[in-house]
View (cartoon, one colour):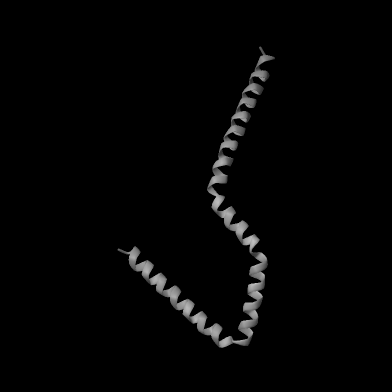
Length: 94
C-alpha cells in the first residue's frame, strides 16, 4: 500500500494542475475580451505616433510665436473644465 499512496497523490496533483490550466485558458479569453477596447485604443495611439509628434512640434512653434494665445486658450480650457465639474456635481447630487 505504501507504493500506491505516492502514485495516488501524484495523480491527484496532475488532475489539479490540469484543472488549473483549463481555468487559466478560460480566464485568458475573458481577459482578452475585457481589455479589447484598451488594446484598440493603444494600437491607434501607436499608429498615430508620428502625427502626434509632428503636431506637438508645430504646436510648440506656434506657442513660441504667440504665447498670449496659449495663455488665453489655457484659461478657457480651465474654465470649461470647471463648468463641466460643476454640472456633474450638481447632477450627481440629485
